Image 1 (cartoon, helix red, strand yellow):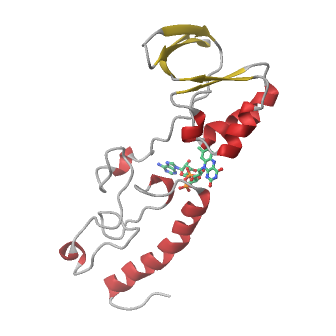
Image 2 (cartoon, helix red, strand yellow):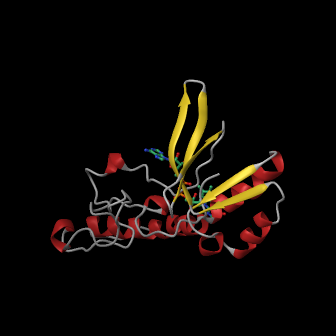
Image 3 (cartoon, protein in one colour):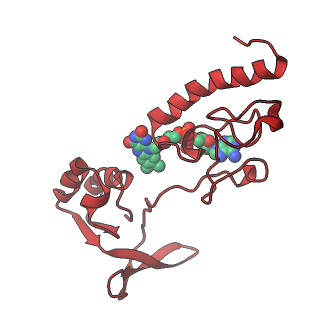
Length: 179
Ligand SMILES: Cc1cc2nc3c(=O)[nH]c(=O)nc-3n(C[C@H](O)[C@H](O)[C@H](O)COP(=O)(O)OP(=O)(O)OC[C@H]3O[C@@H](n4cnc5c(N)ncnc54)[C@H](O)[C@@H]3O)c2cc1C
């Protein structure tokens, strides 16, 4: 398992009881990146070894699957090769939004920007609503939205909030009200 966030911690707690040995590879000490309750939980697991200060440098394999991973020590650059068949990455998310990048503004990582993407003139004297993209009447919510809190409750909340904003945009377009 590679990664030091809470998702990695939850995955370790889930997977460890099902395997003989689990190595957790992290760049920084767990206490800097993971909630205390998860650190306590996984450090108490007898078959989990935490490899601090390392990162994945390369993978080896063929059409049958993974054969080995090369890990690099981030302090001295030393590399070691570990034969393995299974590697789980919990290194963060990449938004699946390349298809939108030609239509709406995205940030450096590809997340869709909202809230300040167009000026009054572009939408007939209306500024962007908080969940509206740089394209008038196109909205983005949840994890794909730049700056969102990557949590279920946040995504659901934005889903509820965006409905009112869509009504506002439609009302402005037609000059009437939308209930
Ligand atoms: C391992 C892990 C553990 C997590 N643990 C927690 C936790 O404990 N608590 C918590 O609150 N949050 C947790 N999260 C975060 C949480 O899952 C997300 O914040 C939440 O699911 C975001 O909801 P969403 O609807 O924005 O995106 P998603 O749930 O990712 O849903 C997006 C949907 O869009 C679909 N899709 C993608 N591209 C397209 C396309 N081009 N066309 C059509 N459909 C498309 C996808 O298939 C997917 O169904 C965790 C995430 C991970 C990965």
